[in-house]
Length: 387
Image 1: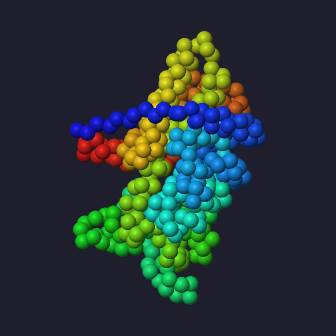
Image 2: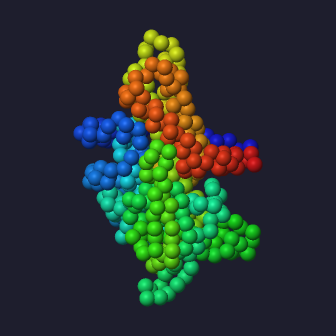
Image 3: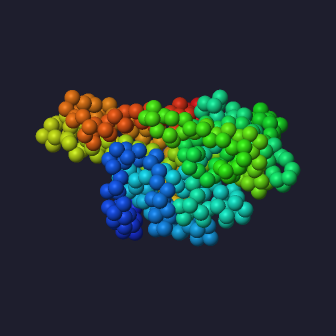
């Protein structure tokens, strides 16, 4: 049986100098963000804040300068992410584009789409959403039914997309979507290949025939959407990579989605609130909160190890799935711990009380986004030769 070892990452001195710079920026920007808004963590959006990050060179940090990037290290990027997440900065507007859409375009459309679009991402001027999930597919991307067909008409040479995407976070504020659709048959290669016949397209969200409908979550907030495609025309050069390579490309994209510190820091505001009111003389508080902090330390070392793998050009898919799975367990346990330690004494309306209420309603989604727990554990089991 193959084992899995994630070498702990180490931060060089330039990372700590950058950390001080980021903290100084946040000390100026974050007082206006209320504790309740900070609970949204990386799902809170502010386009102006994203542009300010772009102005400071904190978007597209590792990308080549010819794409508007800054050619800094993956570990420097990690420091910026960590500091933003630790204070609940409103980074959602640019998050998907910076995390995965830009790298995908540079890898698979380096001479066509990337030169036009990626510099906008680095400046905080272009936001993306992910067009993968569909209403009848659940977590089984291989069963998607949205389809693109070649067509030439008065709009030129291109493709016409019909179908629906769901749970498309941020689609209502996105400029572009990277959309996975069928362009051929499942067995396009002549074999029983469920992953065949898929392709990815860059879709302008203002294209006629594209409709974004809000899905209000149980917090009463609008993050999710259903996106409907009714004869949506996409120019021929908006095909990303090669026709039929969509599944391979999605695998690379999901590795980026599962590898960052957001996969264990989503409940960090609640932890900070608990630490603020904890009684140092109460052994229950010391033991329970000390255990969580130790888990954070372990997950941080694992997540840094994944960042180091990316810096070395290695494929972190297996390791990232493990970090995401274990991180979600810690995040989702936080509200129960808060109720156990402070449920009978918390002051109604206090920042701790608000954080407990918000996080209790938010955590069910943490084991769904970026791949359900069952999907992740299947990837881990397969990677360890357990299935």
